[in-house]
Length: 247
Image 1 (cartoon, rainbow, N blue to C red):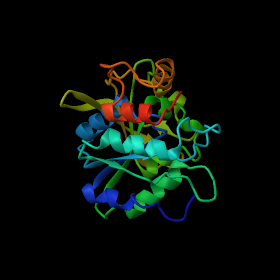
Image 2: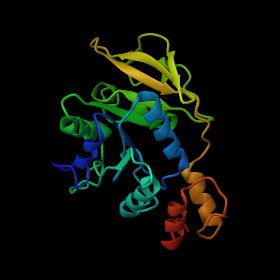
Image 3: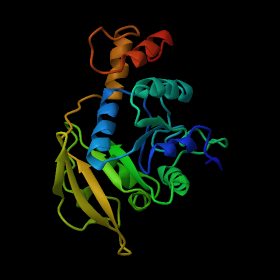
Image 4: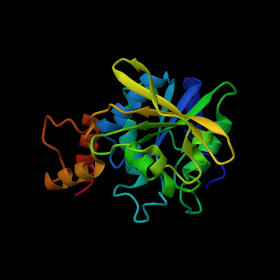
């Protein structure tokens, strides 16, 4: 990993003290990503959601379809009208070519957070289901409590069966509030050393949008989705067509 965060990541914390890191390929960033971030912002009373395109994912050795530069540009366009969303380059490609590990990024981000701040790690259910395969996955919730957003076809199921080794749910999840129509459930994760950390679940998001399916549709449509689709922000759709991505 690079020794210092790239330009553009440190300024993200000027928006408030409750910050959620939202990392991913964003290949491309779509309306589902925006809906997840809006739900977390509302349910957890966040000040800022950091959208952080990843440089090199260890679990995707073949890399992303679009370049990092294109994914950053598309993400910037996707969130430009959302005042509480900020583009972060904290997960930019490392100078030495090593993979981006979420645990390292979160540790650096938390060190830069103001003293009274709180850092969360926002992810979709698909990412959460693979957390046990992440580098130091069991340590991530103790650096930044998890906010997990579910999607159709990706049920969370029995959390004890999908958590990284050494983690357990201390109690059943309970609904703590419903704010602006967003249901929030909370529980407590505990590790083998006895440390505990909050866990948050957004179980009611009916978002059936897949980046891989969007790429396939763009390819089938010769570069531009049909007018009236509800998959991508218009600016992102135009960028894909103008730069002939996913063809």
